[in-house]
Image (cartoon, rainbow, N blue to C red; front, side, top):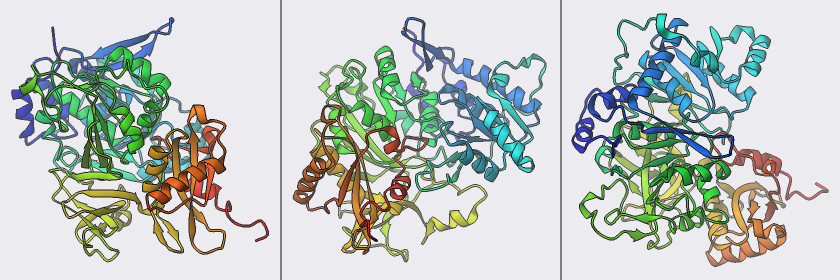
Amino acid sequence: MSTSIAPLEARQRLMTEPELGAGNFLDHALAVNPNRAVPYAYSHSVDHRGQVVLRGHSLLDLAALRDRYARWYHTFGVRPGDPVGIVVAEGLEPLIHFLALSALGAIPAMINDAMRPDVMVRYLNHVGVVGIVADDTTRLASAYRADPQHRPRFLALAAEVQAFDAESAALPEVYPYRHAADDVVALIHSSGTTGTPKSTILAHRQFWDGKQPRMVRFPAESYDKLMCLMPHTHAGGLSYFMTTTLLGVPTMVMGDWRRAVVEPVMEAFQPTMIASFPRSFVELATGELPVRGAAKVHSWFNTGDSAHYGHIRRLVSLGERPAGLIKPWLLASETAGEEALAGSQFIDGLGSSEMGMALFGQVTTPESPRDDRCVGRPTEVVVAATVLDDDGNEVPDGTVGMLAVKSPSLTPGYWNNARLTASFELNGYWLTGDVARRTPDGRFYHLDRTVDVIDTAAGPVYSLPIEEILLADCADLVRDCSVIGVPAADGTGQAPVAVVQLQADAADATAEHVQDRANKALADAGLATLAAVRIARSPEDFPLGPTGKVLKRELRTRLATLLVPADR
């Protein structure tokens, strides 16, 4: 049986290749993998009978597509260092544009197509793109007619690039482009959960640093397949695609994270690994579990915000683990003859585009004890991780403060915004934007985003531990939730409020009933109780950003007067 996976000796070579980086990983994969003609990157469609159809693409296929797209971009005057906006539907397509622009030394500004059009235009103007390729240019063209001075040099349909007759078009004399270590290879926007999206820089070597050990530790047995549910316009999706391209691991590049789309593809593809942001894991862990689709899953990989135990504990009951697969990125070949273990493992990684990868990791199996909000210890790429006070001083273990890291994987900064970059730097560390505490044995606990801390009259209250209790201890009622701070009824500080999505079989539950159950569980856990509960009866009541994160800032605005007496 043919395999697309690169031999171990080839993967070992990649670990120490000095020129390898985010801008040229496809060429290095082509150079070392003898299985370059075997399909490994999969897309999917649905035929006229409603059946899932899988289509595989080899390394050679991707290189041919990349070169054709690169000829179009070069014909339109794109040159090294030019930022270009990419606004195409999630899946394999934005990755082809990324590869084409990288091969020209240009800078793809990857845009999640779920971003609101007005926000998108503001973001593209901030970046200063020389051109935009989009699935639908109608709204963008209209916006630039109203503001012609910001119109980029070209605004083209993605279909035009796809249909380009490249036979007569030239490529640069030096192609693919030879990246220096600090060359910018992509601009990745933040989720916008705390305001207008930031533009995070990914550099050629920086975005590869820390991922080298995956070449021998990431599961890459002959039976392994990855299903990636992350947006591939995001650093997380790009990171996993880079990893599996270099390894040759068969990968389903999904363009949709909703369960109704994901589960049939799971059943057709039969992945052994699934990588996602928490949003998809909420969907998969809710209601009847996807037993058939997850039958062969041994590992779930989460990054971005850390996931919740209430969802993790259901997912790890699925699938089976090859004997020896007891920690993340460990090859199981030494124990291949031993009996498999029931259930799977969940690798919960706290990371962000700014961190370059998940810099903290915690493994949960069916046998693991509950340990709310623990994100584990720093990964080996982290030079230092600590908790700081507002003045940049390290706080004692057990004290809550700002999570701070030093790592070569960290972003060089924010595009066209040196002041914003400086605001995340303190005492030689990068502030991750999280509130955390560390234990004496070096484990970290993630309590909140700094912008989401609830400032009550009695002191700070952290939203994530409260959400853990609702999702794990009120699981028969609560499908998903978001805890925010709103002005307290007496005008002194904020009070915690939960916006709750109900389980399907608890749809008739009242807000008062949910609040009573939640507050009893919170009191038993020694946590602050809720001042109110709001039931989200529609998707509009539970607003999500482009990457599937709940928009807490929007909830705070909507519910700002919830507790304020009517006569005030």
